[in-house]
Length: 230
Image (cartoon, rainbow, N blue to C red; front, side, top):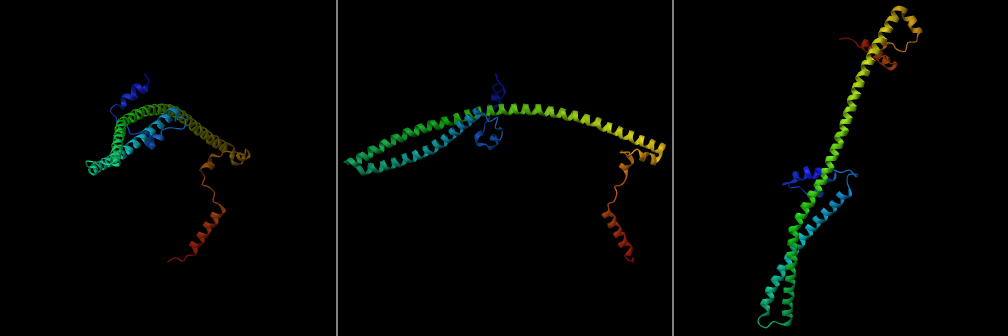
């Protein structure tokens, strides 16, 4: 027994499922790859049944209106015919009776179909729902597996990053210590001869002021000094 039969079908018992093909959200559940020929075929068949249901209901009402009109006309014809009806009156009466019989046959057929169509629509809609649930279940499983892989990768990266940060801090501390010892032992002039590319002290100095900023600061200072005090 498949999971669809074992789990999904019992879950639908007693549930009133909306017609899926009329819900735009249903169409968004599938990617192009997941929109299989089976799903496409069932969607087309379901839409045809819905279209037929609408046609049966509309035409059934129209035929009932026509029958009522014919019945009203028969009453009038019967009153006009009297005891000695003309051939034309007899023919009109026969035509009306024939048409009413045809209406009755069509009404009976439409009413029978109108009863059967909801059952067929519901049955096909439930089948489409089962396939939809199967597709979504597989997608959820795939996404969950990928999420677990991603979470594992992120965990590994975090651990590696933590190791790298600690290693970086150790190297920085070692460089500061080496620079300090060499500076104390050899002095600044000798250190400059080594063309040191790493100076831990430089990391903690304030950034140099640009020429434009220096000129602006000088102008502000001059303006403040020239302003008379109250």
